[in-house]
Image 1 (cartoon, rainbow, N blue to C red):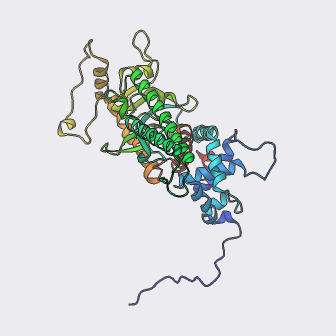
Image 2: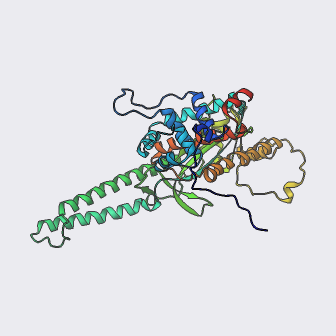
Image 3: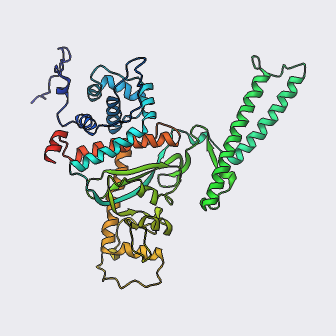
Length: 445
C-alpha cells in the first residue's frame, strides 16, 4: 500500500481573505489585548501636542504593539519592527500599513513608564470587573535575578581602578616628557601626543568617578549594616550599566551582571501579578515591606503574605504586620520561612502530628514565626508560595522568554519591568477567562 500525502501547491496564487480580521480567530490574544486597551482607557502618553512635524503613531496602537510583542517573546525594538511586516497579529495591530521604526519603538518604551504602570493597574481593575480577581486576599512574594544589558567583563573593582589610574598617570607623564623633546619618532605614524594625553585623562576621570560611586555604595552598606566583611577594594563598577550589580545567579555557583526583580502574586486562584519592581540589592533581606507596599490598595486588600527565608528579619515582619501596643496585627499576617526548607517531604513529615501546646511566653520572634508556619493555617498559606509566585517567574523566563533587560540604568529597567508585568497579566487574564473575547468575558464573567 503506497503512502498518501497532502498535496502542497505553491504555484497556484495563495490569496488571503479580504478582511484581515478573518486571518485570526475571534478568541485570539491580540483581539483581547487591543479590546482591553480600548476598554480601560489609558491616559498620560507622551506625545507631540503641538502637532508639528510628521504624523505620530497612535499611542494606543504603540502600547498594544509592545504589550503583545512582550507577551509573545519579542523584546528587541528591531525584532518588533521586523515582525510588523511578517506577523499577522502585529500587522493587525498596526492596521496592516503602519510599521514603526525601531528607534520610535525604543523611544516610546523609554518615555512611558507612567503609562505602563497605569496599564498594569487598570488591567487588574478590569480583572475585578470580570470577576477573575478578588478584592481581598493573600499574596506571595519572591525575587529573581534578571541579567542586565551589560557584561560583567566590563566591570572594574575599586582596587583595580586605582591600579589603572596610577598606570595611566604614569603614561601621561611619559607622553608629556616626549612632547618636550624635539624627537617624537617614538609614536606610531598618525598618532598625536595631545590626543593620546586627553584619551588617558578622560579615562582617569571616568575611573575616579567610578571609585567615588563605589565609595558611596560602601558607606551606604556600612550605615545599613549589610555586606558584612566585604572590603572597599572588592566593590565593582560596570561601565556599560553602572546601576547593575554582579549578583549570584542560578544555583548560586556563578555570578552575572544583574538586577533583582521582585514580584507579588495573587494566591487566590488567578496567579495575576499584583505588584513588583526592580532593585539593585543582591538579596531580598530588605524587600519584604517595600514589595507588600507596592501592591496598590485599589487592587488588593492584602490579608496575608507568604515569603521564603530570604525575606525574614524581625524588623521586616513587624513593619508589615504593624502590631499595636497589645501585640495585635493591624496589617496583613506574614508567613515567612526563617530558614531554608528541604525540597520534598520526609517520612517524618507524613506522620500525623498532635495539636501543639500553648506557646511559651519567652519565645523569640523568630521562634514564633517558625511555630506559626507549623500550624495547619500556616502550612496551607505558605504552600501557596511555591504554587503561585515561583511558577510566574518560570512563565516569564521560559514561556515568554524574558531573561535579560533590553534597557539600561535602574529607572529604565523599572520601566521595562512594568511592561513585562503588564504583558504577563494580559496573557494570564486571557487564559483564566477561557481564552474568550473581551465582550464575552464582560457579558458572562
